Amino acid sequence: MNETVKILVFAGSARNGSYNKKLAKFAVKIIEEKGAQATFIDLSDYEMPLYHGDLEANEGIPEAAWKIEALMQQHDGIFIASPEYNSSVTPLLKNTLDWVSRIKHGDGPSGAVFKEKVFAIGSTSPNPRGGIRGLLDLRKILQLGLQAVVVPDQVMVPFALKSFDENGQITDEELLMFFNLAIGKLIKISGRLRES
Image 1 (spheres, rainbow, N blue to C red):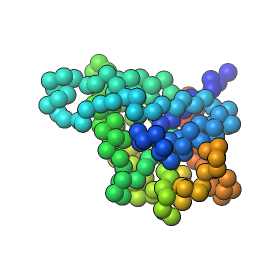
Image 2 (tube, rainbow, N blue to C red):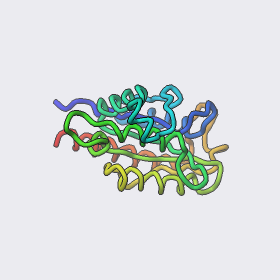
Image 3 (cartoon, rainbow, N blue to C red):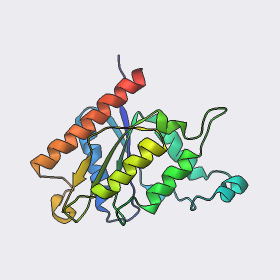
Image 4 (cartoon, rainbow, N blue to C red):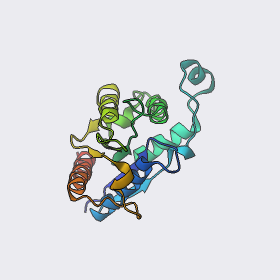
């Protein structure tokens, strides 16, 4: 009997009122509706210094990075809701990925966890582009930099100020269709990779 697929969910923002945190929490709802298990974490609970090679050499990898890497190991796939900062990803998200990518186990390569998991990405923004420019950079980081599998479909929610109702739900039918498509592929591919 196949085990339930487990998906880790987080946003690349620490701000309490972040629309991308709202998007991440909505992703949890979609994941659970599709019969998978979702775990939401808040990166503000995993503080790390700015990555620096000398800091790593002298003090090692921060405990928070080890905790995130352990959570990634425990899940089959990851959904990241990524805000767009100056047409790219947030410093918080990039720093988190950089630290986790430095972790290695035994004689294995550093950042091996990224090669073993499936990712889906999404973004929401008050502007009409929905954060697509930041997603282009995030996809490049994950696929080219970290050699991760990233599902081709991605979630872009424009006009964030009016795209969520008072309960944090997305009501636009077309946006919901694309969201469900991306999450469905994340769950399906994650399950297949785990069984391979």
